Image (cartoon, rainbow, N blue to C red; front, top):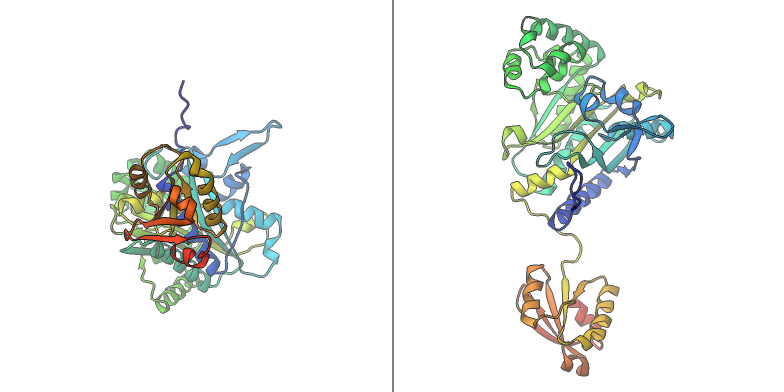
Length: 422
């Protein structure tokens, strides 16, 4: 019987690895540029970490978590998102007592039990940031700027940044009462999920993609119109900062995020080059009460997350090419006879000792077919080792991009030899 990977998981190799490395390297270099440092959390946590943070009424907690009992009967869950584990770590190690704001980033795999589809798997990877310890609108603007800049660096065009405020606990509570009254006459026409959300978390109805629910929401009151003075001033200052640095944005009054922990600022970035149902690239928001809910001191925080697997799919769909970092030269060494491979091996050691990527021919094929293979696999140069090369020390090298050919005594002209690969 042939064994396959479990449904909803995938093996990552070939071009996808290069896309993945490009995305992660771009993320890490930007995060560090903005003074974020990396944190790595366990792949599983006590289930309560997610129940208390994400919200028991959310689809993730109700339907999508991989939860199991260990041998001592403790309930554990594979992490479905990155913020709650980071905040648990911040509290456990009292990182909130360090210089604030504490800026952390992660690149980790997540797990959710949902129907697999392109760019949405049961095991998936996310990159995200968390800025802990200040409620200043300046940090909101910086986090939003960082998300926008990340996708610009990846090569996405026609980006649209959407921002909104879901208010504080006071003005949101008042809005929810008004929203429930609006929905009361039509609550039975909502889909089964939204019917349950009506009582437990009506804001999440705005997340629904069912046409009947979308139609019901068209003329609904918007939370943005019910913000208290402080919340309105907060988002007003964020907009001022974004204008200062030239980041364009749109206020989307019905924008919400799927987790219960969000307060005030929420944001999302979309690509107008994609169909509206699949155009969200990443997003996040402020969660000022989460650390307090976990037993730590009230500590305002904000963050975002980006799906790496989904970003790869969208880059391919939009024909955005990844840019390989580091040296571009990749050298393929062809031995014309089997007994010439010792010489090729010495040459390969020399190249790799000088940080040049190379490969040797392992299969007995003609020189012509091996050159074609090198071109197919995007090597930049080939070096052919024959009897004359071994006797004279003068090797023949061909640039597969310019088709120039060189002969050089690589042992005597080391610097000139290495210069040819730059």
